[in-house]
Length: 504
Ligand SMILES: Nc1nc2c(c(=O)[nH]1)N[C@H]1C(S)=C(S)[C@@H](COP(=O)(O)O)O[C@H]1N2
Ligand SMILES: [Mo]
Image 1 (cartoon, rainbow, N blue to C red):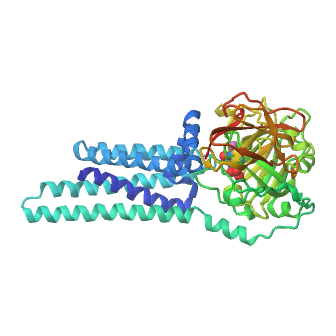
Image 2: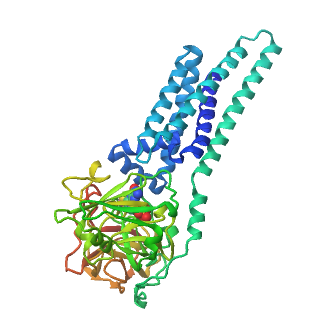
Image 3: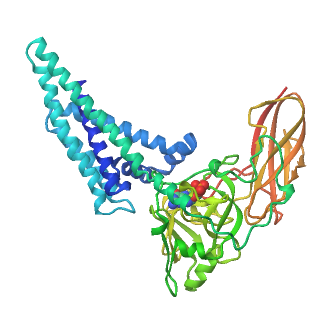
């Protein structure tokens, strides 16, 4: 017991020291977070899916909590080993710390300094472990009740201090290093330029006022978040540049000030995640402000054989976008603002991509710093390397928002309502089916544009009992949403959203 506690206290002290050092030398090199990121990158696809499915966007908390738990167990084992078979406890601490060191130095944004926090964790962990183990055995071998009591107290105080200081340092270092304050300050400092091309006002009929229906424009605070970044990258816009490289006539480099000085355009675009199950909520609609990527690509002069643009984020994430989607006339932009404010840190501050019609994993790179003009034959992107399709056009889909699944509603007139989308194509019709009856047309609200979702509603005369409601949409090319079920892997779910409602 005492030995296990000595192990945990030593490792806590080591990790605390590491967090403080990481804050000074390299915030991304925290051993805990590097290990967590390595877990994300190495864990099999089905597990990632399962975790995201189970805990939604709390996935990061779960991953860090699991890493902490695993480390605590290993630390306890190290303590026990150090007592029964020294020096194997120290060896275990060094081995686990070594893994964190490898994780920290192989991150995409790693430098030589990235090794320092893990090295400090190993050194402090071992020193404290040796010293606490000595005190623990002193407590055991002390002769006489008074001496034993004294030695025990010394051990308790020393290990309590080590553990407490470690946890305090870890939390403090983390808060300081998260850079949240720095990014928030930078976001406040920068005033949004006036758009050169303002978006047309939203048609008055686009927004239905039905309680329980998703708002037409998703507030940024409610917007889904999906990324592989355990630590939200904190980028000082003064140091941000975008480089256009690869198969181009001339490389182009753009600073943040240069980007803001360009004629920026506003547009509403609905963004969807390929991992969104039918009926799921990994989709949102926002007002973006940015500069069309096609103009920047034209400046660079892509070679004729290029068919893909590999965008890269500071954190190493990459997305492969078909070059046509970035050169045709759609609103594919480098966005600097979301819903009238600078991009929130977790949505890509200072600059991200937004491309209508493509799932986020092949288009919506946050914290973007490079656009490499290339080919699908030569390059592949982050999720493509993990079993997802290289191409990810958003699939036609529709969702019932209200009533909620399994919710009881009163008999009589019930307004069924939801959203439907087929970005860059548009929606022409939405139909609802009650139980296994005939399909009836829902009222389709006006769309902001073909790049956004649209709302629909359906007045239903609900009779007592349990009923099944199903929705389907038709896109503006006359294509009916398929009822065939497909999983989210490899290129997006299909099928119809069906809910059960109890009336009475
Ligand atoms: N740098 C970076 N950009 C990224 C990702 C990521 O993991 N890292 N995830 C992509 C995916 S899968 C989606 S669905 C969208 C989600 O954008 P949001 O978090 O702003 O909703 O971001 C995309 N951009
Ligand atoms: Mo996604």
